[in-house]
Image 1 (cartoon, rainbow, N blue to C red):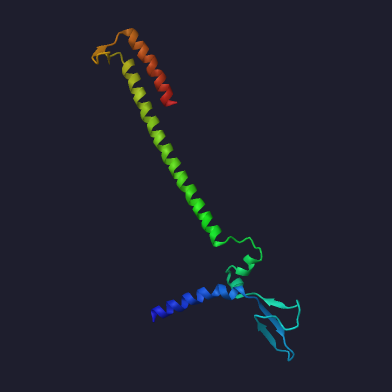
Image 2: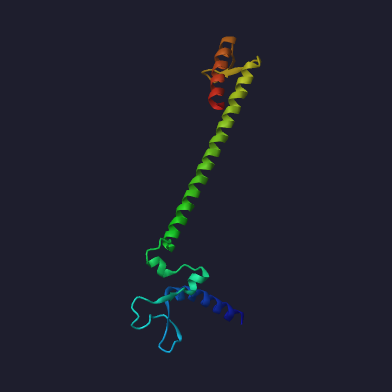
Amino acid sequence: MRTSLLLSALLSIALIPVAGQAEIYKWKDAQGRTVISDTPQPGAGKKVETVPSASSTLGIPDASAAAKGNDAPTAADQELEFKKRQQERQEAEKKAALDKAEAAKKAEGCERAQRNLRTLESGGRVTIPNEKGENEFINDQQRQQEITRARENAKEWCD
């Protein structure tokens, strides 16, 4: 029972666009009766009244309107537009992820450069490795050179 109800609903929905593709004509016959048909009145020429189709009264796009040059997008056009929007969204997400990673890298570099500068300016004893890989304490002249370099690094990373 439930399946047959669902099947009949689907069929009625599927047939609505088909009904909307044909034009419907209305005229009075020789006896004065109103005739509604899918073919025009015989011998009427072009002076025949057309009745709005079921699809136009239901708001369903008429296939004949698209064939007449109406700029309604086709399913293929809609699919292309969807894929284009999807690709643009993916590219935007990828760019946002790269920008976020770059910002995190810059923030880490800035923090490291500022920490190094604070250490040098604190006046405590600082060692640097020599050519042999051994740590040596730096003198005041070397400290000033390192402070100058640390300030440049901090400016580069933090601006």
